[in-house]
Amino acid sequence: MIQVGTFLNVVDNSGAKEVCCIRVLGGYRRRYASIGDVIVVSVKQLRKKRRLFSKVKKGEVCKALIVRTKTGLKYSSSDCLQFTTNSVVLLSRQNKLIGTRIFGSLPKQLRYTQYMRVISLSAGLVS
Picture 1 (cartoon, one colour):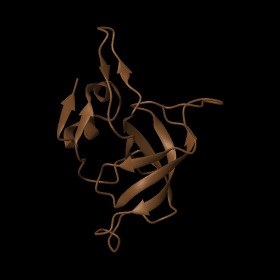
Picture 2 (spheres, helix red, strand yellow):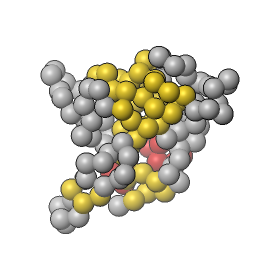
Picture 3 (cartoon, one colour):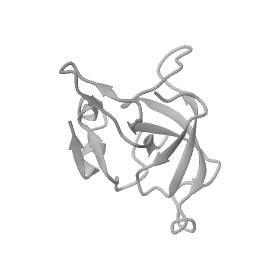
Picture 4 (cartoon, one colour):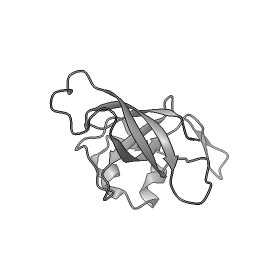
């Protein structure tokens, strides 16, 4: 579960390394977001090698799609899927991907959202 003030890793090649959640979208007084939800983030740290030609700048506010959480996904078959980090993919104001590559595998639950392009750019799916 992601809430306001949570620091998250960025797993695309947009140039950002770490972001902070400043708003959870999707309802009045909504507190928590999980995998597949869109949040508003502020860029806190950039990647060292991509600082000069980064697609985002430090302090910039943009949207992000949550792709991994430390809190487990519970399935009806009593399975639980957990990741070691909270991770996001950055989106533009028109909900298009900023980066062109996504690092690591993603959960299969993202297949049922409107962001199929995220799945096609990822390394693989985890059920």
